[in-house]
Image (tube, rainbow, N blue to C red; front, side, top):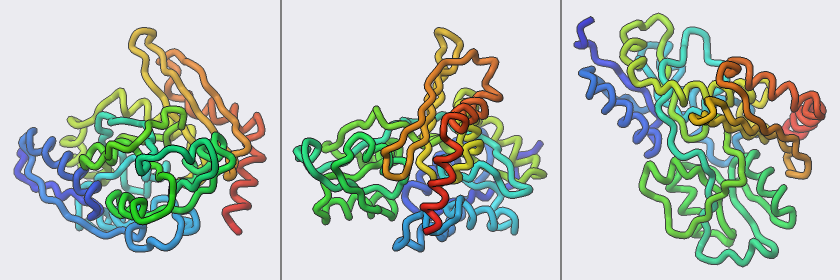
Amino acid sequence: MAKNRIIKIGTRDSELALWQAHTVEKQLNDLGYKTEIVAVKSQGDIILDKPLYELGITGIFTKTLDVAMISGQVDIAVHSMKDVPTALPQGIVQAAVLERANTVDILVHKGNLDFLEGEGTIATGSLRRQAQWLHKYPQHKTVDLRGNVNTRLQKLQESDWGGAIFAAAGLERLNLKPETFISLDWMIPAPAQGAMMVVAMAEDTFALEALSELNHIETEISTYIERQFLRTLEGGCTAPIGALAIYNEKTDQIDFNGVLFSIDGQQKIEIKRSFDISEWKKLGLNCAKEILDNGGTELMTEIKEKLKK
């Protein structure tokens, strides 16, 4: 098939989103494909005065690009995989998952960690991070933090907060990781954190064929398990749910850790175990069912009630 068609790459216009789009562009160019980047603003970037869960939309960062794809403005779209709803719109398919970067969350602080021993305020726009922080530090307060990476770092400097929580991958990609941070390796990441997903239209065989060459199978399987876990718990993008699946080459097993918290962090239902690689297709589903059977069903109902208020 001739590679003369230009693949239009849709992206949000934040610095991190553009970095991701350029990464995909370079990989496609290296394979001999012609590309063009088309940046669009998403509602999630425009409405910054409301917490994400109050907007009541899973996929607020992906919706604008979905529309641009369906209307033919762009051919493919690049997303942070953790922002993508587990059910894609009709006609749009997952075409590639790129090799995963760092999955860890970090706390960026101002050089003084005394607050960890006493009272303190931590900023995060994520219910998952909020719940896990409050579980470990019940004496602390959390405040909502929105905006792109640069805006959030700026807000932290101008505030009286002890620190703010970020995904390490985002800061590393933009070379913005400061010296003053601690790694929160005890915090279970968001499903698919650190991975990038590229979507295309289901009938666009040209784009699908091109993108299939970028797919990283190990990351695809891990993120599939984590997102299946999320979908089964009916988390959308809002409930405090963490999941991490890691392929262990030595044992040929998947090590899985999944967790559901109450919003205040007081309740925690966790599953942690290893499975044979052959079980990967149903692994996320089975782990989520176990959590639901162990009090998760009631907890999810409570969370939904709280978020409605």
